[in-house]
Length: 257
Image (cartoon, rainbow, N blue to C red; front, side, top):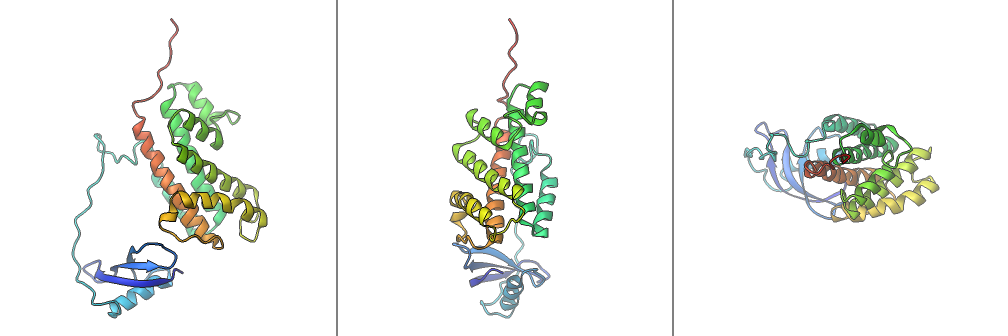
């Protein structure tokens, strides 16, 4: 459960007065964040914030005001840029959410890393010569440098398809993935996992989540969800956008004279 230190600006989020929008400062977060309080929240702090808002503890709840629908970012074909070239995103999100619901650190780590590895492969497939040999190296040859997470990320960097920061994130995500795959006890009581995973997770934290979350190396749920999974999510969306960016950059097949 998150510990909140302040709540302000409560406002009914729907005409039926079933949920309340507000701004909350949590101890675990460095910044105040928008929050929707729900009396049926699975987390007790969500239920408590709703009850206290409704009781007027944080001032009168402002009336509901319908918000305009956000504009979509679409490409010329009318398809969201983030979905272009990533048709499995909905299936992936369902799998990721299922693992989060199960609450198993190993499952969460493995499902996120597998999708990053797959998207790196798709980036290479979209960039290299459109030929069966290219696809074989990426998807069918486990001994190929393009058939592994490490090889794909390094080749993508060497070809200028990902940045040095993205390569670093791939390396740290892969390091945690390898530990989760080979250690039977994915837990902070496991000295081997803790010793090797914490430095990789701290590097991921410093790259992005540090702007929002307070570091806590003794909370496995925080490390897996707020650091690892959120870093993977950030990277995945950037890689999905990269698929759009390289749409016209495929290497042509060189013909014999």
